[in-house]
Image (cartoon, rainbow, N blue to C red; front, side):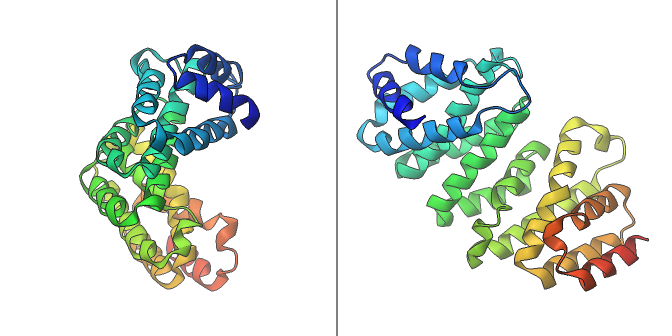
Length: 264
């Protein structure tokens, strides 16, 4: 795949992007149940390697790939082209520090995309930035979670709730604080608003991110679970039950039993 992509990317950087775009569309696996995320990641990785030498040509190419956002139809090759462009923005900004100031707001925009697949790669792009520049991106992510809407909150949670990231101590406390902040905002929403799609998406994300972070800090994570179980909030209880199902928590039987007892 990479042997095919490299010459196509090199050609696209000279202004001939049609061949690359045709390849991305043709290999997208869309329409279908699962887009070719491996291809989008390979494309992003190769482009990011070349981007520092060709920053203007790279930005021109990426702007072209994402320019049809409002016209993109879900589950089509066009959606995959948009996905690839969004993901590559994160990869390239990770390699070009001066891009980060512009790229982070761009990704906060795509976090609200109508396309679930675009929202997924936005979280991956934010994750890439977080790894490259934690001192710069982590405070921005925390602030976005505080002031952003439900879909932007969802992107923040998905970005930081990654086991490999949470091996770094600097991410653990902020990650748990972000779980708490999102849960508290959900708890504060009136029942009528909780039926909205964006709120349901946030709830679904919390249904797995809380357990990912809890594995990294079991005492604090389970303390939070016990605290929110006492709220007797049906949506919060759903989040807890979903997390308790995760195999990653199986080794914490005493802790999970305590939370289950509170939910009973």
